[in-house]
Length: 404
Ligand SMILES: [Fe+2]
Figure 1 (cartoon, rainbow, N blue to C red):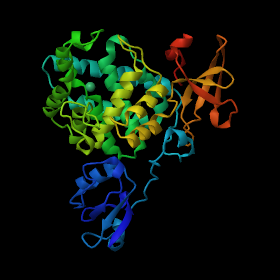
Figure 2 (figure 1 turned 30 degrees about the vertical axis):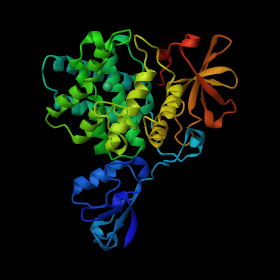
Figure 3 (figure 1 turned 60 degrees about the vertical axis):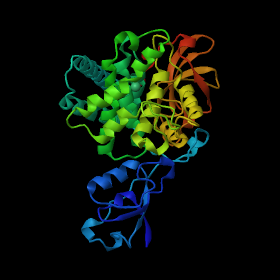
Figure 4 (figure 1 turned 90 degrees about the vertical axis):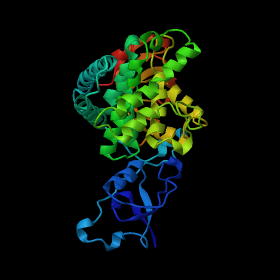
């Protein structure tokens, strides 16, 4: 008999009939299989679906399990068919409690994380191994920070110095992947592995010469090939690192693969790319195009999300891009928006049930002068957001207006 159960009820010995997640195109998706052990349970939960179908004729029946194995309650899952246009009608899936001193705490963590990754890249260059004893606690703190103060860490991670891009990008991708996985309701232990992979996804760049990494102009074909080799190098370095998980390896090894098979190094396509690899591709591109580089200015985050949706026809799975938008918000925290009153405001925090209506701080009038800052919850305001703006256009320093 086929029974639909919350994924939290899954136990070894049950027989999976359908994972109900066609959109995810996960490795498991097309398979019916017996759940052999806790590892299988973790993998299925890691996919991020709410409910699955099991065949009780071929495996355990939850109704016949002893009371001690009663399932725990299943958390509410995200509405996965949400598009940006309808996002403000979606249920709340993510809450972030802000604590006093969030910004100071996030700043300290961000500084330390950048330092550790910078040192690690130098060590790799010198032929040393990655020390997971150092990586694990750092990742645990970043994951913790996203769970408790996402609105403080993410905008901070987006601001980067030109000459420090590689390691700052690694920290940023780690924070963004954590937020993304959290929205997909991936179990915490899987999120940790995803975050490890995200922090280390570009370690292979330690084996690419600086002149190529930081070249301001267009790369020659040979230089571009050398640049692209960083993915294979990341994989080689991580495979030689004791204690690294397959999830973390997938994140690093597949972050330049594309859904239509146009990526590298293996031109994987569709479901050949793991869920974690596909998430990493979206986050890697988002962080790259929203960051200022030597040769180009970063795009406004809302514009970048629009681009990702446009490219998702080919490069990414659209549903996954929409889930990412739910993770960061349509107007991501730290971005600049224009209100109907012609005032400009910096987004302070997301209201997860109303993605079009975050809480903002009004700071500037488009007539060209600063205003006394005023915090407005858009859910209770008549002065609507009518679009995103660029800090540079108005010569406003985003670092001065980081959400507190
Ligand atoms: Fe990369």
